[in-house]
Length: 102
Image 1 (spheres, helix red, strand yellow):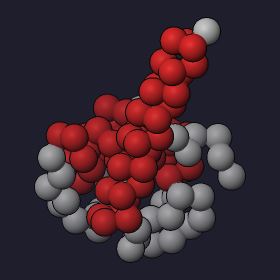
Image 2 (spheres, rainbow, N blue to C red):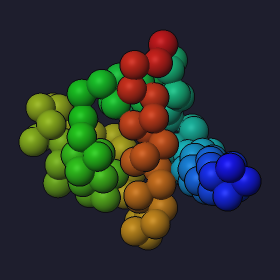
Image 3 (cartoon, helix red, strand yellow):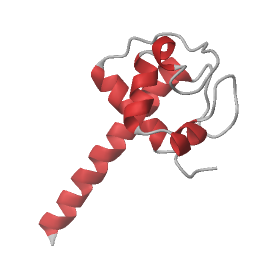
C-alpha cells in the first residue's frame, strides 16, 4: 500500500509539473493574445482544444504562416514563436487540457 501511494504521488507530481511548465510557456509566449477560456485577440484555448488535435495544435504553433489556410483561416496574425520541441509539447498539452472547460 505504501508503494502504491508513493507511486501515485510521483505520477501526480509529474503531471502537475508538466502542466505548470505548460502554463509557464503560455505566460511567456501566448498570454498577450490568448486566454484560457475567454475571448481575447486570439481564440481561447478551450475553443482551440474543442476543434484541434495535438498534432494540429503543434503544427500551427510551429508554423502559423504555412498552416493558416489548411485550418480554414483567411489570414493569421500569430507570430512565429520558435519554440523548442519540449516547449511545443508542453504548450500543446496545456492548450488541450482546456477541452470541455467553460
